[in-house]
Length: 171
Image (cartoon, rainbow, N blue to C red; front, side):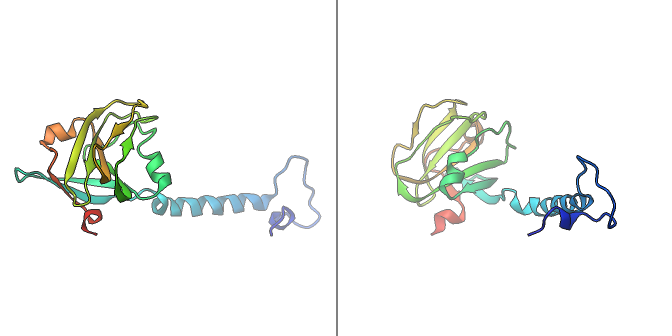
């Protein structure tokens, strides 16, 4: 373990004044800062391609974050103030079951697309109210929920019965 004396690169016999930080700590903190800067892109949320194929033959492409564990699903899109039009979040529940969502601490109005295991949209809850604690049920057992900016489903003509193309639905 490195102690304060190990990080002090003053010449032997040099006096340290009360309140002085050891000179070596500056180097240590700079190294930690550099490491964090280099690793930050790797720690950032990654995006995966997802397409929605409408029954009318149109294809709409998005880049989505995928919430695969309890912590990511619990966090969801909370506290975010904006999201680009071509982005979204896909909640993978890992098994087919009835689910319910809510908008607590979520500032963005959203469309919630409840998706069956085969990738077809079971139900769309359009324009979910920001910050609401009202539960929004899936209406039937589903494998996933896709959240998009509110109004996206209507604007693009996405309806129940349309199909999502993503590796999650090819298991």
